[in-house]
Length: 127
Figure 1: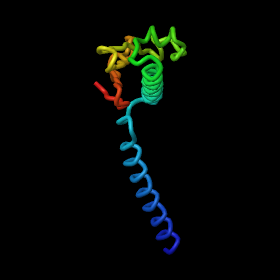
Figure 2: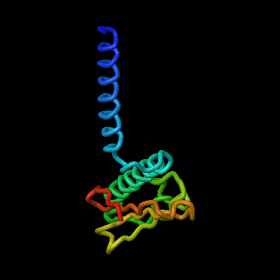
Figure 3: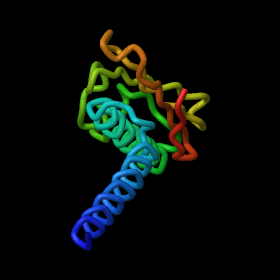
């Protein structure tokens, strides 16, 4: 009888542990998105931060923000902004004093994925 009670106790503890694990996994960032989407979106966010940092460096040396082509010509941006990770990057520069970089899904397989943007505040927003 003691063995059955001990075994029952172990099963109950395992069930509670599984429930806690399941709840924690559901609360992870990404809202339960597939792993490939989560990985690519994190990569796109890193790209946006790198582009925004390049914009800041360009502003410091030239006195205004730049387009993506200008950043590439200047050597501040080392990667292509067309179809990178299935996203296309576009820059909007207002009077050289404000910028917004937008990353939109270009791959038809990623049509439901988020469009991300960053501006001079260095805050990434999801659209």
